[in-house]
Image (tube, rainbow, N blue to C red; front, side):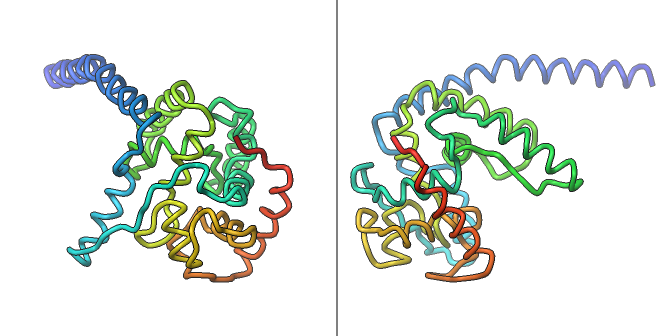
Length: 235
C-alpha cells in the first residue's frame, strides 16, 4: 500500500512539474496568436472547427457559411443589440463583470444547479477562438487567462469586431454577414433594428430557431433587448 502511495505521489509530482514547464509555452502561443489577430482576421476558430466536424459526421461535404466583414460594414443596430443582450457593461469592465458573476453564483446556489452564467463578450470570444466545449475548472481557468490577454492586446472595438464575425447564428452559420444573408437576405450593414434585435435574441441558442422564428420566450427576450438598446454603448 505504501509503495503504491509513493508511486502515485511521484506520478502526481511529475504531472505538476510537466504542467508547470508546458503552460508558459502554451500561454505564450495563445498570446502570439492574439497579437496577430489584433490586426489580421482569423481563418477559423476552435469553435467553428468543432461545429464543422459535427456537421461532417452526418454529411462529409458539409461546409460552414462565413464571411469576414470589417467593423464599419456591420450595422450599428446589431452592435447595440448584441451588447444590450450579452454584455451591457462591455465598455466599462476589463474582461470580467464581477457583479454579474456574483449574482449568477447566488442564483445558481438558490436553484441548486447552473441556471445562469455571466460571461462577457470578451470571455465568449476567448472560448470561441481557442477552447473546447467541455465544462471544467481547468477550461474556465484557461478562458480567464485568454480573456485577460485579449483585453490587454486589443481595444474594445476590435474585440467586438471579432465577436460579431465569429459568433454562431444558426446551423453552420457564423458571423454577422452570413447571419444577415441567411436569415434576412441582406448584408450585415443593411440590418435594421428589428432584424438586429432578433439576431441578438437567438445568440444563446442560435441553432434552435429557424429563420424569423417567434416563441413566447423569444418575444420576451426581444422586448428586454429593445428596452436596453437605448442605453447600450458601443466602441
